[in-house]
Amino acid sequence: MDIKSVLKDLTDCAGVSGDEFSASEKAAEHLRKYAENVSVDKFGSVTGFIPSGKPQAKTLLLDAHIDQVGLIVTYIDDNGFIGVGACGSPDLKTLLAQSVTIHGKKDVLGVVSTLPPHVKKETSVPESGDIYIDVGMSRKAAEEYISLGDRITVNSKFRELSDKIVSAPAIDDRSGVCAILSALEKMNGRKLKYDIAVCFSCREETGESGAKMNGFKLSPDEAIVVDVSFGNTPDSLPNDTAKLGSGVMIGFSASLDKEMSNKMCHLSQSFKIPFTREIMPSTTGTNADAIGICKSGVRCCTLSIPIRYMHTPVETIDLRDIDSTAALICKYSEE
Image (tube, rainbow, N blue to C red; front, side):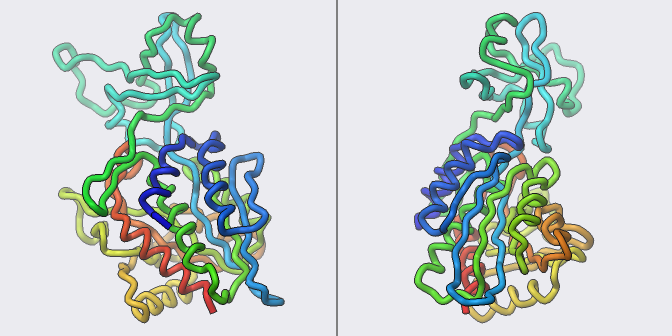
């Protein structure tokens, strides 16, 4: 699988929490190459199955969330300016003077309204209720295409910064989706220890509800949750981040299964898969927190991919870390 091409395909799709269907359909299209019974549910989560062919095999769930952070239309004022709220937790300090798309009855282009620095007195980070979008229309014209509740994305694009480093919107967590797809391709033709259930879950950024629903429905014995975590930047602390290109981040947390985490480390060492340990003392802030307490409990481990500039339109990643994550998932799944 061409990881770069698939990641671009996934990140080119809009899919703000609660309105993921464009991204979900694209992810389902890719998943159908590897899995059976692929479907998109009425909430926007994608599921599929790969049977091991073994009677009484346990079920391993591979989960990554399909939604991205963004904005939502809350108000249209008398002059046609669009008031917004945060959907998830986008980094609001990056929004001023950005170009955006409102996904209404048709896609409407706009720009985030901001005072010029010559007349602006305050320098604080805006709150979501303070942000307005200029679509160049009167209120009447805007209301023909835009409704309260429409989702909004910042107009960014997939960029190749170097041979292996790329930047794009929604790398959180389309990179996790990409890693699972790559793992499924690596599993092709190999003997599997588990029946594999796949979920690209909706609404993670707004409370992990897609994972709660599908963790209950799919009832796995174990789960690997693939998400992103913090990559190194000039102003970051080394113990709080991982270097891009350092491999998969294996999670250790009170909410995770230590035996699974230790096995991931052992497999990484045995097969020379680059990895670091990610320590999250209490909960993980990922779908693992929701899946782990479904029904009578599910053994969970997180595998995270380091990215820079999380929850901005220019999330940045090393493609080799996606490949390391996929390789480890494959080794854990096979007999």
